[in-house]
Length: 408
Ligand SMILES: *[C@@H]1O[C@H](CO)[C@@H](O)[C@H](O)[C@H]1NC(C)=O
Ligand SMILES: *[C@@H]1O[C@H](CO)[C@@H](O)[C@H](O)[C@H]1NC(C)=O
Image (tube, rainbow, N blue to C red):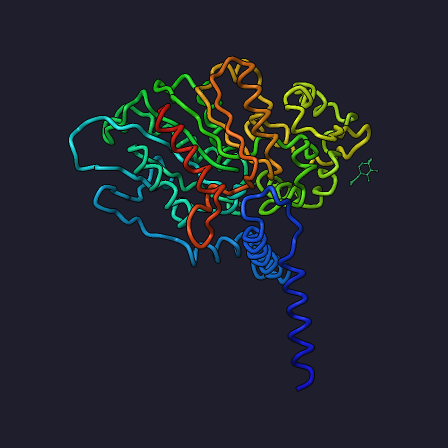
């Protein structure tokens, strides 16, 4: 029996070691974030273990577990009709406020959920709650797209799904069916969904078959580029919950169907070194230094390798594709984009992706609102209610919804 106290001490120490991550005090509710992060890491470690033992792909395990506990049926309330349907072969969940009332036209928001192109769902409690809230508060129809995910499909299928559903909504007869005002439609998404939303809006500017124009795009801490994993925000937040730099690189590799063997080379920017002609041309299009405010750069030193790992570009050719990295699109495309909202968080590897895009759009003459949250962290907008309430979560959600209310 003497072994028991020793065992308890060991387990407690192990648990504390697992949970404890030093976090800056400028974060919203750092202790709570530490616990949330430990939960995510635990789920990730367990699914990696299942993967290791050949039980299933680790992302499939994670998705299965989260969906098992978290999928909601479409539930309507007195003022909100919620339905699941299919738009041009793509599943969507639609939220319609006061659907039974008069025939007056409504505003509409096309919403694309985040989760590294691999996780998340329009039916998950988190996104169902968010879209419900947006729909009620803005008094707009929200169409939340249930696109297919890694590992079932890879780039560009996720984009093709959201594009097909978006194009379908923009058809005059579909707009009429749902009483949507064709002049008041927004495309929005968070994280990887922000990447897809940005890519959809760029693709729409090139598509002459679509006659309805989108009025707004709203991007919440979007992922926008794969060329540089050493921007100031990647350097400053590399181990920040709930998204580390290394995990972000693995999401990218899974999305583009590349081998995880390349992850370490990408972490040091070996995939875009100066001896690789294809990537030099793309990196020259952007001067990271001029696109970021000095307050973000701090002690930043750009990382350009002179000799790198050409095998990455050859193994993952999609990393040169602008549809994956909307940040590097030509100015001629950016100029045609609609009025834009970009939300970024200080404690997020993706802070500079969003910040640089806001700046490039502004330079191209687009009307941009850039909201930056000093105590925000990646994903915080999903955490705005008990038991995972963060004040940064509630404030980002409020700010975003208010912008939509005023501008859509
Ligand atoms: C993804 O990569 C694997 C292994 O390299 C390959 O067998 C498979 O065909 C690829 N899938 C797609 C959709 O390109
Ligand atoms: C980066 O590339 C250089 C040159 O090929 C190589 O020596 C180095 O090991 C690479 N680093 C990583 C982390 O792959």
